[in-house]
Amino acid sequence: MTKVKIDPGICGLITSAEAHSDDQMTVEVTVKSGCDSIRAMMDALGTTFDAYEVCLKKPGEGIFFDYAKEHFPVHAACPVLSGIIKCMEAECRLALKKDVSITFED
Image 1 (cartoon, helix red, strand yellow):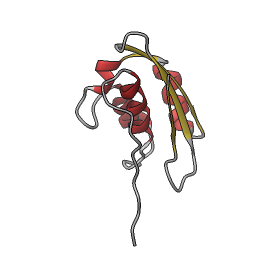
Image 2: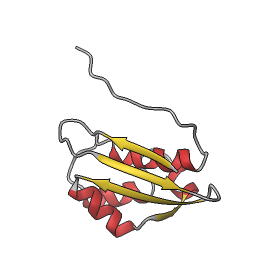
Image 3: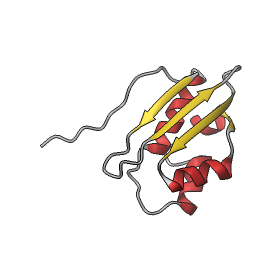
């Protein structure tokens, strides 16, 4: 099982994701979030996905981004979708586990 915690910044709406895959092709993901939009997305899309259909897309493409384009408020820089996808990607061995960050420098 692969787990991530995503702190999206100023909104403070922390999201956690847990992904599990037995075959590195089908992945089940559980997402808990303080964000109403993320919770609604997961309710609508479900919990089981084809890892290749989710993870091996161009940036901004795929089921999560398609949903967000139609239903999310305007906020292009939200890192939560990428965090959920990174969790699934690492669980299915499509990428190595390595922390990512965005750091503001003055």
